[in-house]
Image 1 (tube, one colour):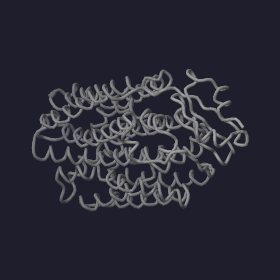
Image 2 (image 1 turned 180 degrees about the horizontal axis):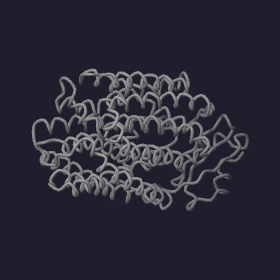
Image 3 (image 1 turned 180 degrees about the vertical axis):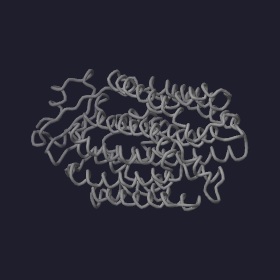
Length: 441
């Protein structure tokens, strides 16, 4: 399974590394461009996410028609062009256009769908966790390297590095990523997108993914501007920003592993999410009110730990909660919502800093997080553990299969490529032999 997922996860890693690399410093460097205001800088920081949100679902649909690899290639080319425009921009509006174009290469949902194509049902949760882990690692590394590269070589160098990473990604795509098989599933119920939002657990995961990403861009507008701005009392140099991001990066990286292990193996993702939300709350309260640089750094550390604890689990939990015919739509809705929130988070923080003080911004964000915490505690449940029964299609009575209903059977589907019937069920409540008898010819 890892061999199938690793090349695709590497592409996702390189793409997100390029996006994240600029985040720790983009707001403070963008303020120096012609025409820049905190509001426009906020749009620039989250701008790529707006076009990501718009194009996630269209890219997913196109990939179903022309194939995953050509669609990913097209998205990478758009990302490459956008990165070059950003590298050579001299005013805030050109930079904004480049960021929008970066986001137009919306391959996230396509890559996730490709994982579902390549990996068996019972291994998809682990595959999604691996991909989420790669994203979290990209996030952690970029926080330490971004400020160092920007202070020594300029922010344009970061965008040029991002362009180079795209070239590497294209090479990996056509030399290492396997071509997914064509699999068609048949179901006894019609799929409705509204069913995803009616499912409390899926809805909660969409909310978690959305708020996590929105808070991310808000933080990356806030942190460098507050630390380097003369109005806030810290008066850091831009070259010193690595001193806040490095310890936060290390702490977040360390926290990521145990969170993924306990969340997956111990089946306690709800508890991990609740702890992360509490840390988000603490981080924004600290960053909003402290006058001490050391305490501010602690707040940033809390933020990084919270983000990295969540990231490996989010996609995995959506994959577990969604039925097989909902996975693509559920991930598409979740990713679109998350990217839209990423844009709003940066824009919202820019508006606030342009018209009010950081204390009011912290109060507003804290109120949102408290509501989020209460909602998650009351609504989210840990996933039920399921097993999968694989039966040769020729040995199954289709009439019996179509009529199969049981409170401990989550779903069934037909894998036509491998000529298999797959039944997902609660193994602690129903025996495999009993299931086989229910559908045998």
